[in-house]
Amino acid sequence: EVNTRKRGNYWQYYFEGVRVGGKRTRVIKSGFKTKKEAVEAGTIALAEYNECGQTLVASKDVSIIDFVQNKYYDYIDMKYRDRTAKDFKRSLDLFIAWYGSYNITKFTYINAEDYLSRLVKRGLAKNTIQSYISCTKRMFELAIKLNVIKKNPMADIKVPEVTENEGNPHVIYSDEEVKRYLEAYKDNTPLETAIMIAYHCGLRVSEMVALTWDDIDFGKKQLTVNKQLISKN
Image 1 (cartoon, rainbow, N blue to C red):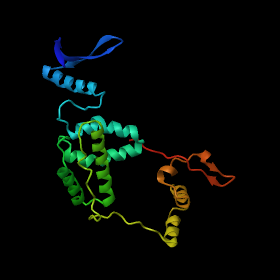
Image 2 (cartoon, rainbow, N blue to C red):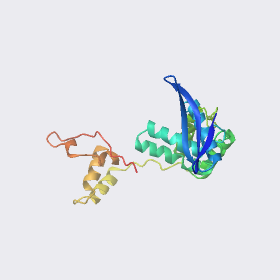
Image 3 (cartoon, helix red, strand yellow):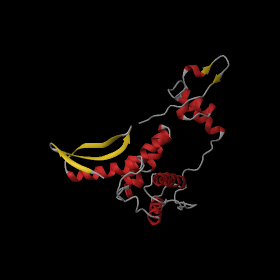
């Protein structure tokens, strides 16, 4: 059980841990202004200790924003590269803004349908909505794995086949349009080389700006594309 005591001007909690080398151990943390704060923090710490760090809090009062910030963001950073992780986090912005203060254990299928409805009414494209729903599903899946919840409320959510905003259709330029476009950037303008490389080699911007001189073999007239430039911030 969790015990507390006051040391000077601050409170601390402590509880007995498992024996190590036959000797008793104790988990202690100080610096709490009140006994209540020490008890609450100690209860959470004991629950996580007993579950090898897998339980977020001892009580059932777990807000969605606390779970996302304390668990899910770390999980994303561990699983994905910087750019992908950043995109995943951005996909949760609206969900957190709307439901961050909700108790994660009380979030139901009805709430999930409400989230989908709000995304559709916002006029987002189908693929964008699908991305937002998918990321939120993954968040709840992690909550299941960590024994915070038992069922994923987003599991049966289906994005409508047709939404108000179908996104930008693919545009294929004619040879004449491409010619006019390339002509506009000739005469050694700063973008001429970049545009010529991007067009003739079909490179993404991140691949193009990552090119270095050793990627170019002027003798063989070969360009090697083997990296991307990714911005963390």
